[in-house]
Image (tube, rainbow, N blue to C red; front, side, top):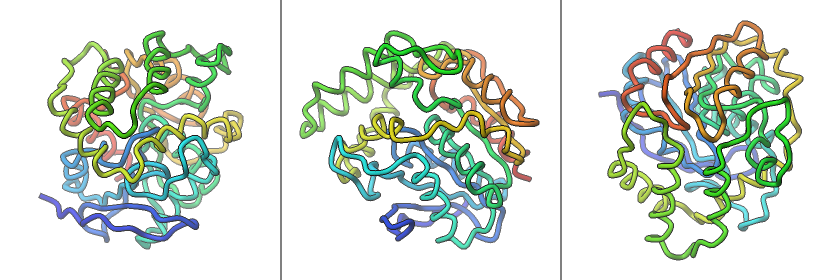
Length: 295
C-alpha cells in the first residue's frame, strides 16, 4: 500500500490549511479538491491509496471553513471561490509541485475550473466530478430564481434538505450526525444501495475533526461572492474529463453535459444511475480514467 503522509497544517495564501498526501512526492501529482461543506476525508483513504498505487503523488486538503483549515465565523465568509482556487495553488506551492492534475468534486470541481482559468500554467489536466459551470445553481433555486444558462434546478427534496439545516443545534454532535447521514441519503442515485453504516462512520469523523462545523455552511454563501466564469471556460487548454452521474439530484446531468460542451476538447464520462456521490463500486472505472488522463 502507498505511504500515507500524516496531516499537517501549512501556511498558504494568508491562511492555515490542513493537508495530507499519499505516495511518492517525485511522482506526477494529483490535487484533490472536495466540495461544499465537506472535508478532505471525503476523498476516502482507499480512493487516495489506489491513485497513489497507480504511480501518482496524491494531495488532498481541507478547504476554508471545513475540517482543520482556517474558519470564519458562521454566516460571515470573507472570501470567494477565486480565493479558494488560489488556496489550492498555495497547497501545490507548499509541496513544491510546479504542475498538477486537478480533480474536484462538486464545488471542488468548480474550484478546479477556476484554477484552470486563473492558473493555467499550473494545470496538466482537469477532472471535474459531479460539478457545474454555474456556482449559483442551488442557491438561486432556493431563492426562487431561475438557474442561469438554462440548466436544470436541483430536485425539490434537495431544496428542502438545504433549508433544514437552519434549525440544527450546532452544539449537538448526535443531531448533526443524523442530519448529515439523512441528507446525504437524499443525494444518492438508483445504481447502488446507500451504505448508511460506512457513511455514518465517515461523517462522525468529519464532525469530530472540524474546528467549527457550523462554519462549513459558509460555502453556501460564498457562491454569492463569486464572479461567474462560464464565458471563460473556452480559455481552458488543459485536457479535461468531466465525470457525472445520470441521477444527480443536486447538479442534474445536464450540468455535466454543459460543462463538457463548454471546455474545448473535453470528454464526458457518464456514470449511469449515480447521484451526487462517488460510490465505491465506481472506483475502478473512475480511478482508471483519472490515471489515463494524468499519465
